[in-house]
Image (cartoon, rainbow, N blue to C red; front, side):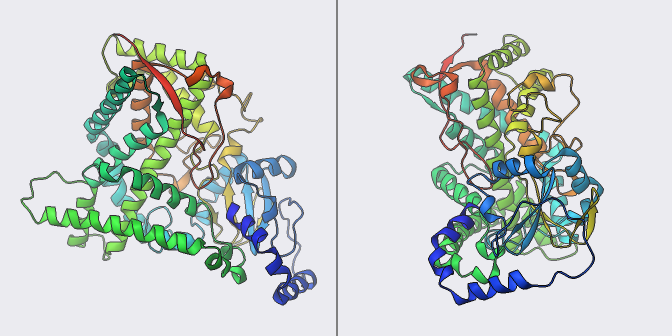
Length: 505
């Protein structure tokens, strides 16, 4: 969205000098407004042509939150030609994601998603229907079900142990620990081993850069999606070229993964099957009622690789950031971890169900820092009434989970990090409590919640169990940079760097 505003600014002279601009402006100002009187949600003032695009800043979730303070939890904006309903309360989100879930089941057809996600063949962006149901079912049954997640326990514990050993080496050498890099590498290794069959350590830095650009592009729809007559600007400013380059590089990597699995499958067949093997087997058997194309397999792998890595390590990064800012909270978590461990050198997954404060820390982190603050947008498939307001077919819907997590009518001291609020509190993030929906809700809820939480809990528990943590250079908690990056997934803009001191056992 930021790119849209930058585009408008960069091409202001061109627009003003264009006769077509004045023609469209006149049409916009004099067009008739016949038809029945609609009861529309409150709206801020808008400009001709661009609508409310000028209201968005560098961080749309924050800008929309400020606007919602004035115009309410259901607010109607206009981004160019597109009406946009912004939802900023738990009650309103329930109306969208539960009462009218089927009406808002599909996402928008953004041009950059078409390029990057193989013409919407992944699970996240595929239109609701038989293809989506079958692909989601394949992912859940063969990768994300409770049974399958439990079967990967050894991989999670091995990678967590390797991460702890890495930190220990830093301690011995007196070096600072780049926790952002550690979280990214560890989650990437877990996901690659589970889904792709092996780690890709030789490509770690390449993947990190490529994934970052991939998610930034997905979070920045082309201006042509809102103003079709200006779609050519995405060619002029290089946006389309960037998207084509990232799509090509990911496609080459995914082709390599598939070829590697095909060659291995044609070998002795003794290797254990991973998720890619399962997808190729289903393709060969043609067992879902329609042919699965190679691009469908690549799109599903890309979904798992990008979502599984990025949103997972984002939660770890913000959780550890908040703990370093709140010494009492990290001490409380350490005490719980060391009590549960009972003198053992590490915490296993068997110990996690006794770590109630750990779970509260993660919930509080998700409340304040949902990985995708405005969730994935949806589009109304028909005219519908929401809380008495008329919402037209084709309206883009943005649910601001970041704003819902800071709603003072729901949360006491909403801007403060207070994990204790979730002790003896039934509110969870699994889609049933709309006060906390960082992973969405309804039929299109993120299916990877269970796997992500197993990774997050195990890694965070061992971090505080094995080491004492502090900020470098004698910095105080108030000095910690909390600036966010831009893109689909919101990370810290600067890496989280800390000092680790190993605890004797």
